[in-house]
Length: 158
Image 1 (cartoon, rainbow, N blue to C red):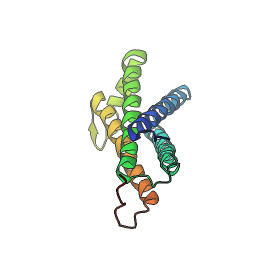
Image 2 (image 1 turned 180 degrees about the horizontal axis):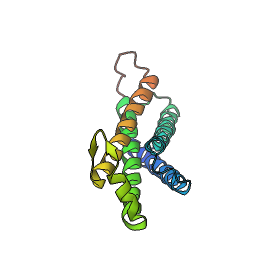
Image 3 (image 1 turned 30 degrees about the horizontal axis):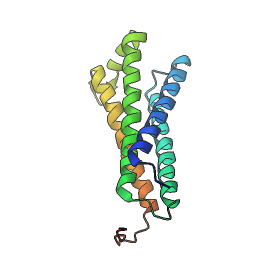
Image 4 (image 1 turned 180 degrees about the vertical axis):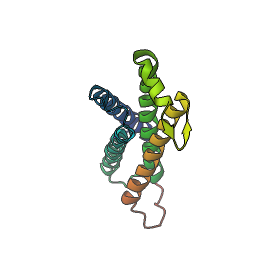
């Protein structure tokens, strides 16, 4: 039985997290809560959940082969989930703000971020950076929990 590549797992769960965040975004817009920064920020929970599921899938694939999951590919999974999920989510927000609801683009641009008003692309870039950071840090923490090396490198299998 071959394991699924970390890239494939990361991209799959990144897409799943993006779909969840887009649905969340549409729901908060229907409820009229889109102007609350805290409510919008909560969409990052879907990246966190997707990373936990992706790392668990990765771990199970390796344990099926009676091996411990390698550390660096696990980190890559979290990075990919965050990058792909947040990137697709930001692209959807950009599409929505430009084509479906142009007034919302003004709302995003006129919010005060740390004393500055940012252009729309910078706001969306910050969404991608935040999602990637959440992904990288979550996978870092989870992969440390699965590290069974005890500080010793594993023997290479030939």
